[in-house]
Image (cartoon, rainbow, N blue to C red; front, side, top):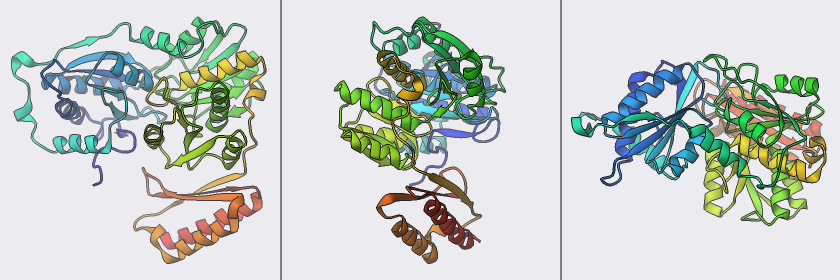
Length: 448
């Protein structure tokens, strides 16, 4: 059964347009509060947000919805998505909510829900909430004396900072490192610079002046040029770029070179493997991780489990098969010893620990493998199912045979727009380019 309101990462859309409107957000609060009633205790929800202007509107609407069904609301203000997941668990809340559209522009927003264990909701629970959203909730409203209360939690940021600091060795200092941290004018604009400074680093912070409409605008992990310039200008040892809700991270080395999630996972994987900290002999990533990364892991005795694109699929595979390390090339790094979702700051701290212990520059630490040539092209279509076309299936089969064991072909429809993504990689760049062009041509003709 397909979901009506929930996408791959909560409910998302243009702010003040359905479904991200105050009346629908209030109903989401009502439905989620009803769905998570467990026993007779006073239920409560943790609500965090990023720095979008529309966050005030959505926060107030959700608060009204939850309190109307008898759920107490704990408001933590601007906080990273992983911090909201953490606080949901540590404060024994019945569910958590993050108001964010991650790396999207300010005029989008979204509602992400977390279960009491801090993990994102299963498809089954989301379907249950959707059924409630389409029903008459009036009969399930709380009696006047049983309405919920709302209050601000003043020490939430300090709780998360202390948690992040404890994810590296207690006696490890970042003293001697000049770090540029780019917070994308987003949710981590206070906690990330403070945590790095308290650990001893010389911190240069950018993207820490949110005004409601500048989140992710020319800053953050999806726009790293500002970070590259600042690292070179200040002669920093490393640059760290988070996205709007701080669940992903991109690194810039001291030379101004961008380091993606594959290289970062390679660093953590080898370090944890040598320390005996991997719970399984490998890690989980998506079909988009580079084949060079997979070959590197094989060379150090580790395996790579691949999933569809999306951090929820990575987490599901990690939980099902007992892995404690996973992520995506985009910088979603999941360290399940510490967090239930991607945590950009905690992932960066793991890298900083390796840098300090090795006493080597970031450019040397973070170049674990040479990425294979990888080409990605998109084919937009209006309707139908082009991938079901017989000529398209034949072309994909032929392309796969041409790449053989020296490459990979990944064809996938986008989960958010009518686009088919065609990605190939391999040792021979010309062959990869030809394969992608041939497949794109056939799909384009079928889509027409």
